[in-house]
Image (cartoon, rainbow, N blue to C red):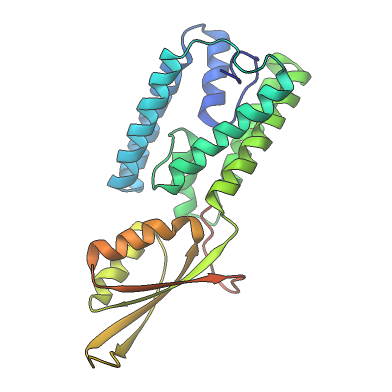
Length: 252
């Protein structure tokens, strides 16, 4: 509605689909859905059932909208405004999808899978991929379209960062009777480490285990769901953290 009618490319797999659409004039939705299939297999293998479920729902809906919504300008025919607001809406959608534990498919899947295991963030991986798209768009469509594409990607990245609030870190204290199970689940699903120590309830004098974990604010919802899925009675305290010194695996 904004990006495609203006002839601008966007970042990620959507931009790749638009490039293919330029050479093979069939609906962008076919390319987007088809290119997502191998990436969804990667998501199933490396990122867990919850992530793959939300991503399949999101990818299917986005592909369907690309089929249904007519490719014609709305709101504005100004290319500059289309680049800014079209990119912003793209970043908003991607950020909301990742924040809820899934993604809109595309290279977000690949970036997330690599970021979980290597010392590179989703943002850096996306930047590398988007640079390749910009260079290709410059060769194929000319420098002006490449510049509008850069503006669209920058707008998308800004909204993406605001939604994820990725620069903020939190320290989480978890008090539970199922320390080992909670710890194993956090390690497996979030790829975060914890520090554990024994504790004793001041009122009940029951034996407890305290877990300490530092994570990105954007992962707080998933962390709380993980804890509650193991121990509904667990006590969770979340504290804002300005800085982390030492080994901290930054995913976002």
